[in-house]
Amino acid sequence: MIGVLNLTPDSFSDGGRFMARDRALEQARHMAEAGAHLLDVGGESTRPGAAAVDVDEELERVVPVIEMLATDLPLPISVDTSKPEVMQAAIAAGAGFINDVRALRAPGALEAAAQLRVPVCLMHMLGEPRTMQSDPRYDDVVTEVRDFLGERLQACVAAGISRDRVILDPGFGFGKTTGHNLTLLRQLHELLGLGCPLLVGLSRKSLIGALTGAPVEQRLAGSVALAVMAAWSGARMVRVHDVAETVQALRVHDALRYGVEH
Ligand code: 9MG
Image 1 (cartoon, protein in one colour):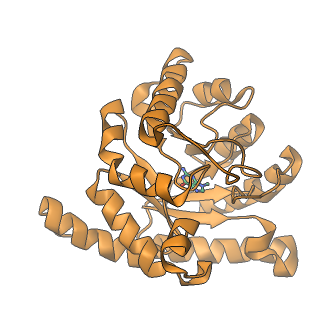
Image 2: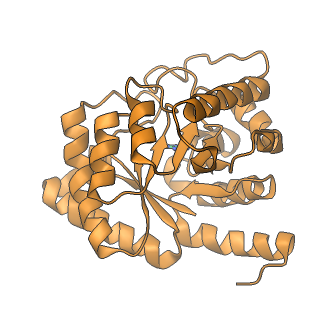
């Protein structure tokens, strides 16, 4: 279970940077107590329409918080970034995992991840956040996502990243219509053949809004339902905002599916 810790201005901005850091730490503690296994810290929004952030601003947002979390919490930390400079600084500050929605395609990112020797999540995205939801098209979304992830996995291996350090993610909502997301979720098991653990992020996404009409702050039930269905279809890691509720649901799932009682 991965808890989301967004450090973008719309997340914690009201009292300035220092207050934002305190509130981020409080939220991180809350997610750790609720049962998160990893905290994913990000300083650049990847929501549809989001503008890019420059490297200095991203470093300023994430590095001090990662330093605080690494000393304060007994949990591993992931950095959600595509920039090699941020990967390097975040790992030096105490992070131990890279979550890259651009699958290490930015110049220098593949080399940085190889040199840092930490696990990496490679995510599929069609286009860039600013434009990705304007009419995304595929001939066959499952085949195209699988081929992309397979190609990025090969690029990692060629760069010296061991395949047992790679996690793959189909990127729900990243350049995908509701129909594409549903097809991918129904056929998620087809990505298991790539031989890497699967991570999914479905929490509060617009897919739930499209199916139910619920605004983003009322998508808890839909988020938990999708986390359970993804786990049932083979996802090993789920990236969520509502950790306690998802932990409870996945415990029920694990008991039913694997006979695991916590
Ligand atoms: C940063 N981020 C936002 N949504 C995400 C998702 O679905 N997967 C991953 N790996 N990262 C995400």
